[in-house]
Length: 133
Length: 121
Image (cartoon, rainbow over all chains, first blue to last red; front, side):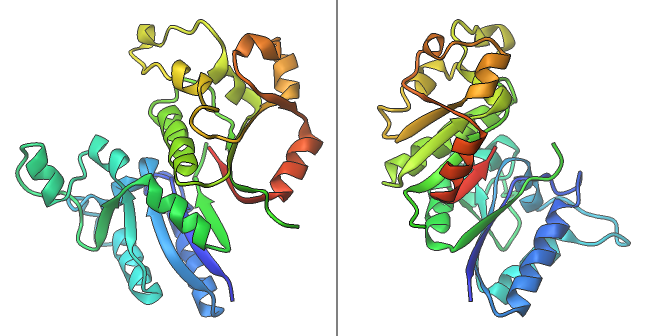
């Protein structure tokens, strides 16, 4: 059994990277491996935007990640610096910046790069999903 | 083989790639600060980040030069430069103002084998 950490940097909608990551994670769990950390940074943080509303006939990526995280028993961590730059704030950050209402979706947590370093240290393998470019 | 590097960052992107360059630097500093043995390779166009006399303000970009030159002070263990890219872009190592070691493809291969976590950015 191996312990995996996932690091997603790809934008949710411009490549198949998120779906690749989800397929990998499901396959790893099905094989009895452990997934102990999922970290979204760079363009991937857009996934955590509460106000993104995909059309009903498209796969709901955010829902798929939430289900996976529940299955794996781990958090969905979002790079706080990248999130703030892109308008994705939890209640605390919104208040701190004098804004009303949080835009971070439920089930996600804002956290720092230190968590990614920590996750890599604990994992047997960390996989990064970059997307194109 | 035992890992002698906890985190190796392979920097392949040139400067002025939006916030990416800053994120690379942040990750190096956070990792080193947390006591991880951290090394970085500036590979291919990545070495262009280190060219002297850049004027980032002309592009409204953040000036990362001072921080990049001081990687050693921030406990980043080893800095490597792509030997082939140095030749290709005609950059003598000593003009980059950095205490760094040139590395070729075989050297990089060996380095990756000694590395626990590799990140390509």
